[in-house]
Length: 439
Image 1 (cartoon, one colour):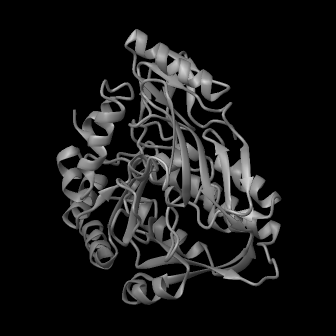
Image 2 (image 1 turned 60 degrees about the horizontal axis):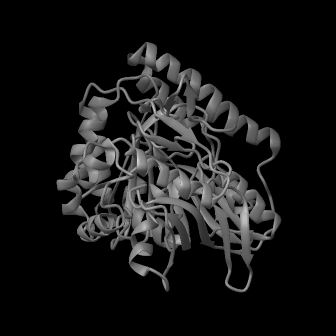
């Protein structure tokens, strides 16, 4: 698939079409030394620096009018330590390549998000996560980082080395430096059994605590304008492998979830009045299924229908109430929402600006088909999320600023103090960071 962020006539655009920039120049360093030299040169010229992955963030977190660093030459596995259970990879490695390479080595990440198009540094730096009762985001699986800081020096950090930088840089927002390599915790490859089945919205809400407690990975999709959800439970399995048969996989994952869904969204965009009827049909189109496969084949799925997205983390105990409020808001509004709402969880972690920092969290993601007006829906949803102490995903659309974020992140000041120390001249600045971290 290649890089999904496009650069035409010197303009960089993200995957969702929500951000663009015209950098002064692009650099693709082939080594850490080359990257450090590029940062030093930018400093001499007074230009800001940003590294950009595949552009899967919906915010302008990677946009710059300065030096745009493309990390696609800093890829591949650098080192596997089977004793420690770690793998060190170049920052520009796409998650897809990492997952396939690890499987070939008989290894796997413990948990992952639901797509694997992003680079490892882009995904971790924005706090990308999947769903898990005990295992958390990609960043929470990091055991070490190498980053080039504002003065061009190379800093390595872990729990034992520069621990204050390690605490923050795992979800660093690109504000502390350019990550060049990441060391992840890995484990011997295992099998997951996925059980997907439709379930009424009210039943999922009533039984949520139990569904969360009984499954290693539980998530569900609620279809607005309906009382229907589609649930997915992933649990470790002794095997044997029983993948989704190829034809059925194509029918359900490509034809229904991407092909027919694309057409349904085109219709809904052209004639919004048809959306509730389409939602009722599509919420019943996916039947139950059970399959057993390698983790990355179970956790991730293709997402070819373009959309824009907002996602908030709320305290896990506030999930059901927040979701019921969201449903009530959609039910009484003239909104026409053709994309399902995705609900996932993560345990508390110890990363300064992780959305799950210091609290067990539940994630609610709202989507709109690319090209449909999303502001009304997202504004109303955001009002509900923030009323429950919601923290926005750093890479997804939101309107929060430093004042709000300092209130919902107890360690916010710790992050900004570290940024002042590592990047006093704001070499890694852009408009987005000015808004979310303050001047």
